[in-house]
Figure 1 (cartoon, rainbow, N blue to C red):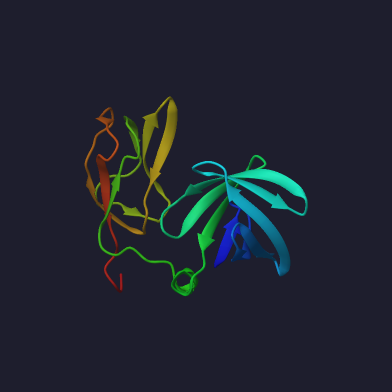
Figure 2 (cartoon, rainbow, N blue to C red):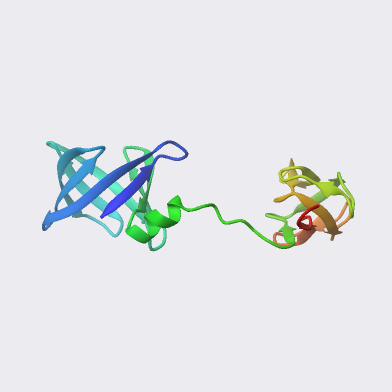
Length: 174
């Protein structure tokens, strides 16, 4: 199985993993072949021996195609690179279409509205400010378009998931 491995937002590295016997693996990292012995020593803990050195790895599954691995205080994210996943990763980023509803990520209080209904807005432009946990968070538009609804007012307290505003993309040719 091939994986793309990244450490937080660092560069991705391709590795290959092939089981050659019970608890024995061939790992290809950047073209270099390494032999590893790995035995599960807990529900999510593995005891690993590589080149005479023993260490523990904690594995946290993240769905069908990926997992995080904690080794030596560093977290690595592994993403499966099966043929379908590889093709999807190489394709264009999906583009949202139609009106986009923006909701509060967390509870807070609306402290400022930068725009009003009917205003043109650019992707990433701040539409309002919501104070949460004593921090002011600028809530930005996800797309270029027109503000067609503002569902709250300055001073309103909002819960996570509360609709804040709706942006409609411009008509083709505008």
